[in-house]
Image 1 (cartoon, rainbow over the protein chains, first blue to last red):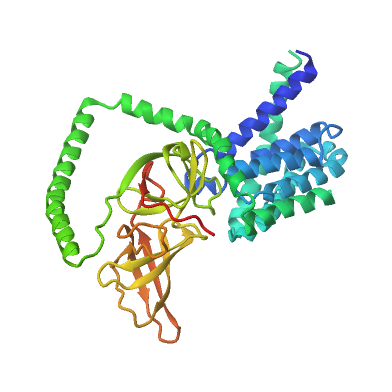
Image 2: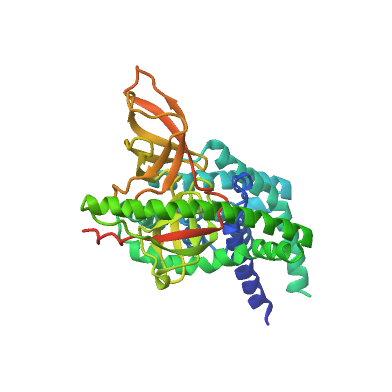
Length: 161
Length: 264
């Protein structure tokens, strides 16, 4: 396999795993702080190759997440699309930051994602508490350095041997 | 970007306010069910391992407990048989229709909605097993909810504790009719528009009244836990605790009542 195709396989596999994690049954206390891995991976891949992935990529992922999670269709699509836009605009700046600095910005991105998704969700009468909007953003931001580390390992082993 | 924004908002609006997506939603059930099934595998595996590695003494103990329980239920059933016969005789005297014996199938829960605000579950039975939209879902202790989307081999059910769910009930003690509404809490339901003067007490059992033509009559729904009658307010504030174990039950019963007539 060419390294390009390997990367495609990696992207697809990582997104599928994140999607399964999205619906993985967690106890109610943990479900409140479930990290938004799908959003995090989307940010990762856009930061990685912004020339290939953009808003349509984010929108499609979001729609799949909506269908899988049974949320109002279009809620995550809109949220991920807007986050993808912000990533597209800011990737040059983000790349120059240290990992922990990036992580703080990821928190801001995730905050946006949560607010927008919840806003569309509230059309169907579901109102989330501020706590349940904020906590997943915090937890997801903490996952960012871990994701960078794991992805780097995978890419070294899997793609460049 | 504008296009995609408008598109997603349009989809969201159609999803929420119209029924144009109903067919798609039913189909989507079949598409995402495998995802839930896969994500449930670790839990299943540990359950299987637990069953395999259970010590003999514990198995014997469990068996003993189940036998005792069975005995208790059998005794109750004997009583029930005579009561049922009596009920049929009385109904015949009154010239009213006989109550239908409800047929049920057992479905297994394969997933729960990941968003803690949304109280929905995914079941492993679909239209191939005769499941239909609006079918009542029960567990061993009470009413759990109703089916909202049906795929071929999977379906989605809304729990009675979801904020978008309400059902007609009556107080078992005196037959007062009320509406019970979900408030997004698995252990709490709100009783809507109960007048201050209505005869309702803590400990009263609320059973389904069947008035909405959706749920079969007489299944236990909730037990009243709090009644606050404030004369300054138009309605009493009544809360109840669901009888069904909404977040525990793994196997549920789907009742075949007469399917409701097609909505116009």
